[in-house]
Length: 151
Image 1 (cartoon, one colour):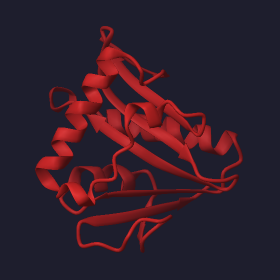
Image 2 (spheres, one colour; image 1 turned 180 degrees about the horizontal axis):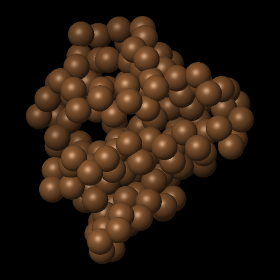
Image 3 (cartoon, one colour; image 1 turned 120 degrees about the horizontal axis):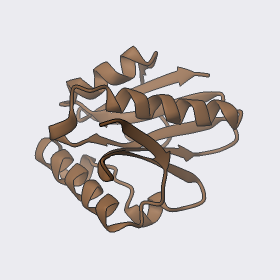
């Protein structure tokens, strides 16, 4: 079946469940004080656009664009269910985030990810992101890896 990616509200039960899975996965790999989660309520804010990937109506992946000012956007809450990995869903969500950011005139995308997420690094590097030092107000930490991309 075809995978569809669309802007949706995160305030849906199946999306909440997907974000709970994401949080649990991150907490298996990173101490809680070094996890920088947005809640679904924060994801529903005016400064954030959430993309949901669905197959047969089931939420299988997510990602978001959080705007920090007129120039900088942040890639947040990227996740694909284990049952659907290897199908480039994350890459497609990143494409949607980047397309939206460009259409809004943002000049730079940044993100923070964990030091134990090599699959995520691959997605970002294939999308043209480069590693960089700490971005926004994230602390410099051994648990974090930072990326940026000029648009």
